[in-house]
Amino acid sequence: MLDHEEDSASESDSDFDPSQLTDKELQEAYVQGKLKPGLNVVLEGKKKAPNNVNELKQSLKDLKKELPWVERLDVTTAPPPDPTAQNGSETQTTDVDAEDDFKREMCFYRQAQAAVLFALPHLQKLKVATKRPDDYFAEMAKTDQHMQKVRKKLQAKQISMEKSEKAKQLRALRKYGKKVQVEVLQKRQKEKSNMMNQVKKYQKGLSDKLDFLEGDQQQQKSGGANPKSKKGPNAKRKYKDQKFGFGGRKKGSKMNTKESFNDVSGFRASVAHGKGGPHRPGKKGGKNANKRPGKKVRQKMKNKGR
Image (cartoon, rainbow, N blue to C red; front, side, top):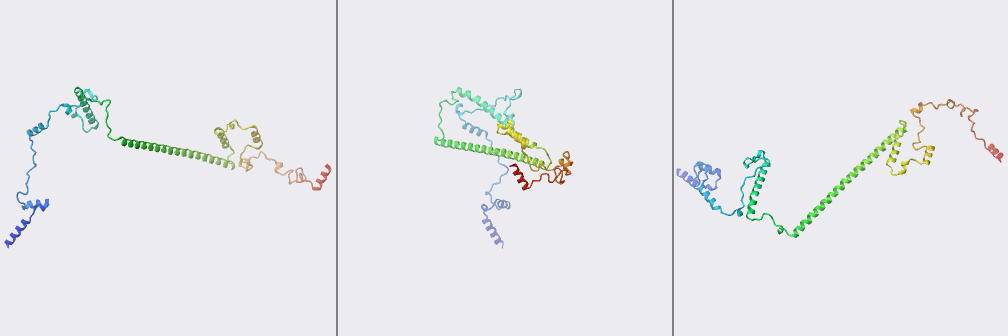
């Protein structure tokens, strides 16, 4: 029995393959002691990087080459003093707040300016040209055909933008014209409704003023296109106005109103009580006062005239 258990244990140990296990299973196998020595290395603490100063200096010496400055063009300089600083105190790069964008960018700008001020005199001393000559010719990176296409495309885009702008202006003008037209129509409709209200009041006897007609005539005279209307009506028009009136509503003009009903200034007792009227025959102005003669009488009167 024991031999059988030892054989099964040896078979299980022989079937154990650490390469087919996961990290968690490997950790459990390591705790149980199933991993054989040499398959893993236990690190005690963090590995320290060596700081071999001598070898680093030797590597730097091997990389460094003794070249003239015109081949290197390296400039190391501090920024010039800030002219805006108070009391002439210079602001060094270490004093600049890195979180302040404006001051940081100004420090970069002044440092680049100091480098240019240092490099230009050295280049001029070495007789190195720092400006492009007047007859300098640089070949275009793109062909003329390609640039012609770009030019045509830009022109087409500019023309389309101008057309769009003109269309936008026309739409704005149309909107403004419609707005003005609507305002004029609304004004006319309001004036017409006001005039109709005044006319209705005049018809019902609530008002005896015709000022709205005079105001309309004055408006036509002031804004009318006919210059003769400013001189006033002619003599013929005045005569007809004096004889027949000058316009206005005729129908219902004799209708009684409250004022006319209470006005008794034109009362005549002889007319009101029928004295000499058509109901009192035999009197002057009675029933037979204007009676037409008969046919025979008219014939005799006609024959007498001959």
